[in-house]
Length: 94
Image 1 (cartoon, rainbow, N blue to C red):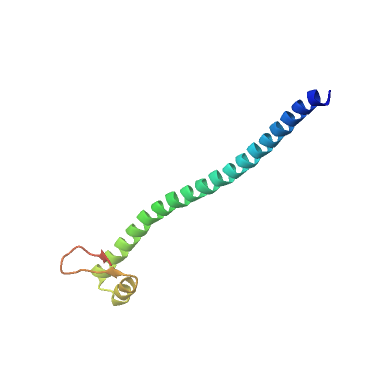
Image 2: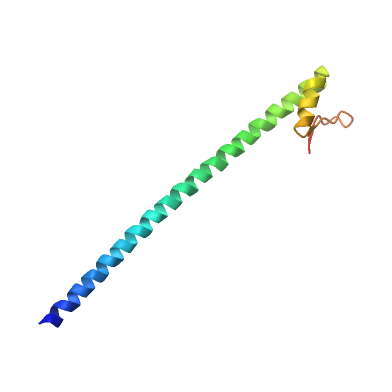
């Protein structure tokens, strides 16, 4: 009689253990998916800001060349923006 009840109890415990493992794996997967989503959003925003930053630097470089503003030229050069007047391109990033 005890053997007849022992097998279903053991199988029930095994199923319960597998359910708990499944829950833990699901929770871990959710946290990883949230982290990946946050990183993806950060990368997307960084790309948008990079385009805006290029436009701002380009406008500043053109303004520095047109007005011959030495302070602005020095500021741009201090941040790695090389103003190339001879080639007419306006700016080069180092």
